[in-house]
Image 1 (cartoon, rainbow, N blue to C red):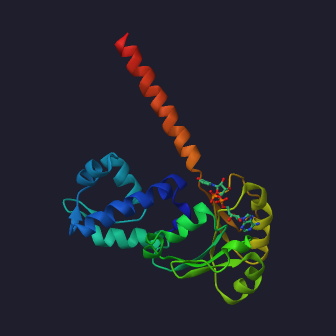
Image 2: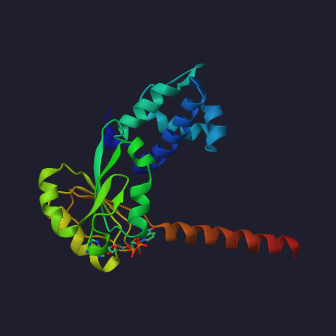
Image 3: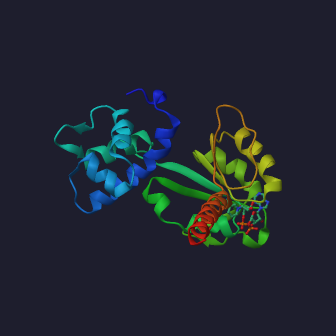
Length: 217
Ligand code: NAI
């Protein structure tokens, strides 16, 4: 399978398929038709067929999809069959919340270090990881293989920190700071902005309220 030819839109939808298939596995479901999956996921059956056709013969006419097989294959495509080591930069509210979330590890994202500049936080243990100071980071990165860095520090310090991480070999940044990072082409940045999601919710709420008012008039 040539993963490079798969569109970004399909890749964006894959984690959702993965999640639903995981739930089906937990319920002991062995196979599912695209129509059933469509009802469950509220996506059209043709969209599901189109998306999954990108990955070759997962579905069979009259049989549907083999749930454990599809789950495993999508997991492989998403790279979830490997363990990724992740560090967190900024051990404040958000950084600590991420560090406390156990399910990342179940998905293969192992938090191996948490770093901050505030000496008050030094040594505090979060699920077995003691918060370290930033000046320990270069040595740490020499000793540990780290693929992902989560940035949960103030926006004003994010660019400089990202440069530093890139110089020390980090290739993937999970960026929570509200800043678009300027990184070399071979570095991948995934931005997460909860407030943007909230703004979309607000927009949709506004549309709903306006529509409702129109209907009442
Ligand atoms: P916080 O103030 O609780 O934590 C920030 C931590 O970063 C502090 O412990 C501070 O000492 C540390 N820090 C500052 N400069 C640093 C540096 N150069 N290197 C390492 N650590 C450094 O803030 P909170 O609430 O945890 O938010 C963290 C960041 O995440 C902020 O930029 C905030 O705007 C952003 N945020 C983003 C969200 C999103 O959806 N993208 C949601 C919530 C917060």
